[in-house]
Image (cartoon, rainbow, N blue to C red; front, side, top):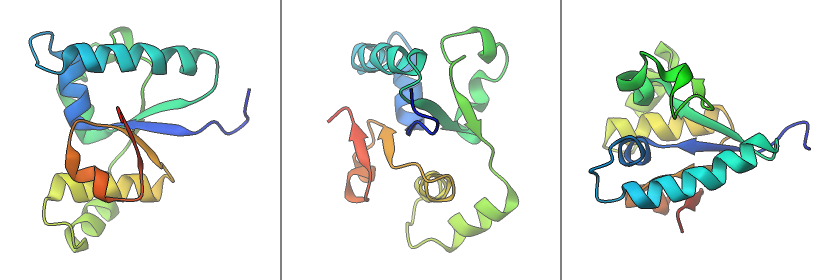
Length: 124
């Protein structure tokens, strides 16, 4: 058990696929998520998500499939930093800002735009 386990951010595209059984990538997301939850339960990692991204599941989230997630709360300073980012897509810029501010280097995503950044991306 680590006192400071690594964090893995579940990005919006991954959350959508995970929570929508009809999504084309749902099976991939569910398989990876089960592995991540096992590691979480062994205190090997922390699961995090940007607060804006979990908003659609806010009601009842603490008892559902997303219960293991810690939320990285977005503040005005994060939005300003994302606005100043060279990344043209605000949602991507905000996610990258939150990763930088919280020292998150690992991400579960189906959005290939994140592969160009210095992050470890799952699934590979």
